[in-house]
Image (cartoon, rainbow, N blue to C red; front, top):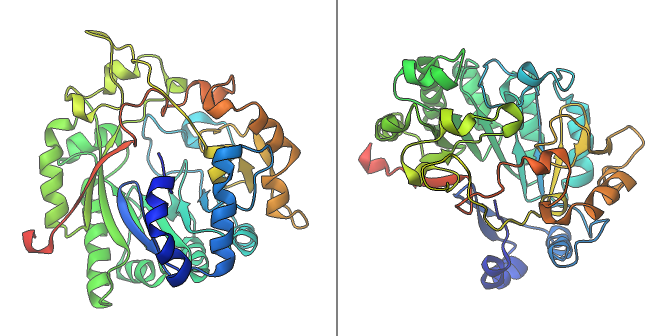
Length: 374
């Protein structure tokens, strides 16, 4: 997944420098950062040097953060590293005070924050405070939900009032029978009602945000229902319908491609050797340890979201330890020195599901939904 590419930034330099505005896409959705102060602009350029020099201790501060509000979930999706499936970490909800410290020390530099990892963000009772606090620092806030935490009108109002920029709803089937094959324990009708609740709140408040993205993970068992889910997104008045290739981490099994790979080649994450399930090698470069800071629910800065065992933590955010010291710690320095753009023997890099990917992004397409078509 590439963001803030050099060729996309150069034409926008006058707009960024003199108007404090920057347009970019993340997961194929369009965003625009506005009123960017000089401190954040300067860091954007300084941090951009990291991709050319790859220092052991990064220049500046990260411009993207991924934060895990909860590492627990109310569903049992078979390809997810939530603690209910892997038992690799202590089940935890991120305390608001930990998040506040993180934002107080990084918020002046961040352009985008992604609020999810291995768990359902809306199980955290502080999620609205978390979103609101990040948004108050002029950060674009992007989150995701499986849609099975009930959003009544009051909760939907809070979502709209919080300043959330975009919200993904995972919908992997047009029928509850198909949907529940992967979203085990989920209820499609509950998801649809929650989407309706947020749409109603947006209308009540005459708000364009959050952008609602109904996302479909294309798999063997549901690919035939993709057109029906696209139609559903229109009927529910979502803003976007996105198609994602299925994540099949070999840590969770060796025969996942046989079980989940779609028949339709354009929906596949990988190309395969003829008549086999062997993935074809593709060129691969990863800049994650320089471009994105990842904070897990335990308050640890980890090397990547796929470090689901916390074996390669850069350190824990403490009351007296600045976030920048953790980001540039000796543990982080050692990790980056041996990283080699993702080609190494670290456990999560060896089985990284972005390796050998045939498209530039795991999001295959994101279709804007015209209001006239609803």
